[in-house]
Length: 370
Image (cartoon, rainbow, N blue to C red; front, side, top):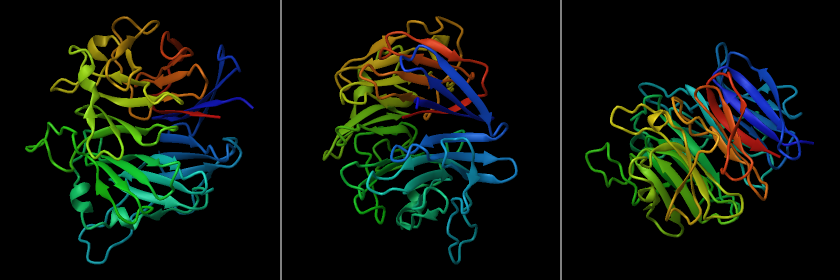
């Protein structure tokens, strides 16, 4: 059985299947043609199970499930929906199911979902029935943590992370809202934004109200987290409470604004980002039309440009927060999808790149699955 690169787009689901040596790739799809697909995630605990976070024209925001590795699909019997609160003047409604994360390795069938507006949901039956996580959605501080300070594309809950050592230890991020942590399985939460800038707020040192674009936990060293934020690149080594801005080591002409950040599967000091133009008018394109990946090999003390094979000029795309991933090989393969509908790959840790697919719809997510 081959590995799969799942691709979620503005108009459906595609997949790439590589040969064992990653020399050739077979493009499959589309499925769900015409529907918005925010995230496609295959279950590492049960590779036959695949979940899709979708926004369809007729069903609205929902989740689709496959138990045969994407050959057939069924809609969740009970998609994520906010609990109706007594006395609420305007009940919250899910506009998009945006993010999916499998639960702890010991909790087969448990999944988490993040939505827009910011909501956290849990399924214990493989994504068929979803329940609101009251400890977050109904928290006394929720109205301030998720205050509707939306990005140009909305307010999203994303980057739901489960500590592989402890199923009760969870992280999540809200754009805009910040990073939050629970140590009791989601019953209570606290902000974790010390050291992170919030340049767009009157008080840049606030406890919450930040704009994390993506947060990643290293799989072999889960006390180390990296964050690509609207206001820079950060790292934290728990139990520290404050993030360190490692993006200040990026070249000044490039800056440290972007959407994705991905980590080496075994080395916690190696990470990759793909910067975008972060000037005041927010073009959200590759800087100067010259896309490049930047890699650190020392935990963010320094960064090096990796652009061999990428377009040298006039490539005005960007890469969204879910649209970059890494595989599990000793020499990791990297993959990213662009807003221009292209998939790019490196089989040597970013040293060189080649285009695997083009002319796809705008790409929202790229995920690797065994």
